[in-house]
Image 1 (cartoon, rainbow, N blue to C red):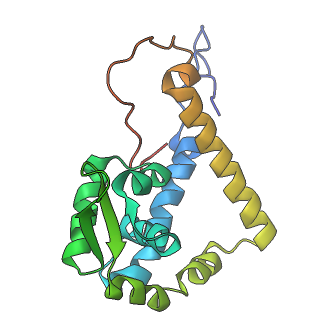
Image 2: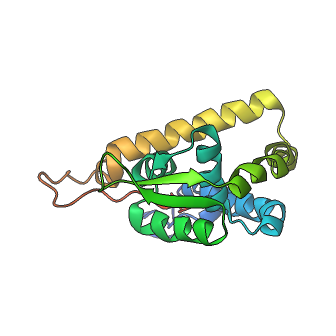
Length: 181
């Protein structure tokens, strides 16, 4: 919410306070979620982004790096070191795809599969920490999901009213998980 500067002849708008901005509320909530996950994941040597990768692999093992990065909005430059750390911890194995040597497939190890049972209570613990009734939580989740989709589809230039540039060189970078919006 923008406030007018009182007493100024032109009544220029003052810069908004972070607490009045949706993007800051989402950013602050993302940090709060990370802090809530930390005590649940740290005893297992995991970070929140690593946990997200494991969730995808528990749902479908043997994904390529791209198949992991796409739903998590992580580029390979962010994902590769994260996957190396998971491999060093003995939770995943990286290998070249037999049909396409350019692709790297990520597969869970026995330890990686076993970790699923140890972390099965994490979603419920986070749900309790959020403190919203199920219906309200689902509605907020859907609203935030739509918001992200709209921002990704329109891009920052269109949202700001700036003209979109034609023929943009290079691939569009996607934000890191937990990056401010």
